[in-house]
Image: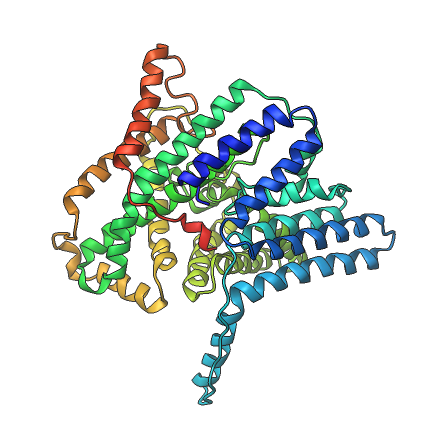
Length: 484
């Protein structure tokens, strides 16, 4: 069930009405409704996926209680290890089994040994990477004494399977979200309206910007061998816009929907393409995943390697980025993408004035200074280059794509089907980034846009966005991050 589908447009009002008008007097009933609705929502894709979700939920619900009850550090580690092994085992089998089998046989073939590789027809359950990381953070935080486990399994099911988040996050921590399930929610008209505005902005990003970019990007990348370097640059730039508007659009819809039910979710994007350096970019891009890897991979590993000084920190960072790349998919292109970002990032570890490179861009000036504009341009260009590996089907295609960009064909006239329609898309992209720039100090771009305008004018703006969505929406495209 896609957020941008008729099914969801029917599903959401039904659940919302039952939640606030039928079960509103008892938050336990509300949690039961959310858990049931979430299972329906997730099972809509494939009912078999529910078994894996249930296994992860039951295992970690039980093990978290055992971790909390145990007075022995050895037993606590055993229970935590069981949780990690179970969840990562599920993730490895369904997402990476064939990749590692094929890589294993390829390695032997390189040394002159020939084997007949085999693979299984494994269906990758949608959202598995997200809910596995979500439940792992729960047991790890319980073992670190940062969180008390819940004794109500319905509450835990509701938390883990919460339908706005289960397919592609945000990867909300149990410490933030689970206590909200344990307390009574009170309907707030202003919060609900704000949530609807965020959903509207997310739909605009996805349907008008991302889906229209996808049509051109797919054509260029699938036929990259036939296009000149100038066209390939356009493909890379449009994919850079597509992946941001697609994923941040999803996050806006998910967070806005979460707010409709009286919950506050963590922020997932903070205008990353306005970053002045790669450190700042990763503080703004996919924030829930970045913070997850920071807290559960980079920080523990850097502590273990602290005797090596900055070299150890650099090694921990590089390993973390490789894992981050692998998390995105079983393909060497993602690993190279992670390694590239690590190489961008590591030099900042050796800068003396680290605090100045890690701050958010929050100046209230209408335009950046020349220095800031140059920094933003360089960071954006490095990001575009890395996204080529992310989007390519193979390393070979990525290298061929890049080599053509740096060939003499870069100075030729770009040409691809539907180029005249791309002018309209370019207009929307420019308007989009202007609005993002103006609203960069808020949680989402149109949060305060027009808030002081004459009321009919403000509502006219919302209706204009709605009409634009219906009139200029591209052909329906699945959200990019559903494949991860």
